[in-house]
Length: 385
Image 1 (cartoon, rainbow, N blue to C red):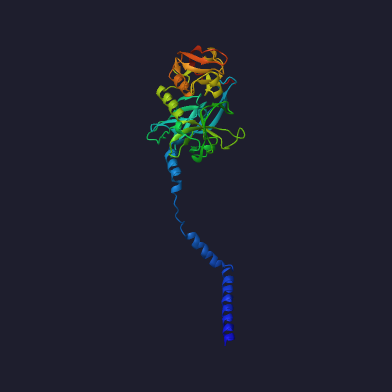
Image 2: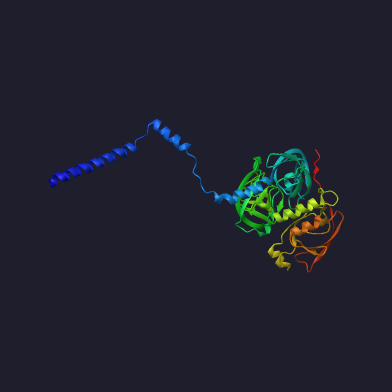
């Protein structure tokens, strides 16, 4: 009797195993085309599952704040060049260019890079909503590579300025511009470094006190916005270092700090004149922050002075005997606190003004004074055919 019960049990277990095996084989057998089609239709007809997107909301909100203030700029003009002395001239060759700009005020003032509009005879500004206007040049400052345009428009979305002085390495950055003429494009990175000095760019321009970012920036981004995580303007994108003359982003982008942009744009708008017209004074110097070793050698207090990197030929500074390597310590008795204070001082002067320049020069005891008579900034002129 016991053996019979065991036999029944074994048969029962064998049946269960056989059934499981058959079910397994059936489940792993290919579906018919009709069954497969129905299952695919059911899957694709199911709405996507909702996910919590709050982690990305700071970037989304920042872009919504800054992107409408960024414009595309198209230019037609003569090819702008500079000679060995840094003097501008134009070739008799029509060129078309693209860049970006940022709306400063609802009533049509826009900031961009000077190199974006240099030599342009026609400037077209396209807003984020697609509306476009021809722009007039209010004024420019090649020293800081900034220019202010104006369009006959109202109720524009203006950027909110942030304080570039409060930036820290590692802060989020958002770059918005018109790379390669594609239209509004947003990229994200961080502040890689601050106060980059003496950057010599391939087109002959120099850059000082720049913000370095790894947010991808490409040609056409020039003049566009660099914003913080709050969507505030912290810089104007102006240059990249790349692997070649036509190279793209390798994570080395540079922007003019927003505090510099605000000061220079304010001066240009207040003066309301074009460069080279009466009132647009010119010193003829390229300067940078004073290197620490030079400041120590000249016994200068921290953040004092502006180092002369280059003196343009036949400029007011050259005629007054100012030399590369000098440090401007004071202008008309006012202590110089960095290159921004030099630019602000000159912007307030007129052609023909006399300026007493106090200089510290390596190897010379004490301070030197020179009197400079400011001249009009030279305009680019067309080269003779």
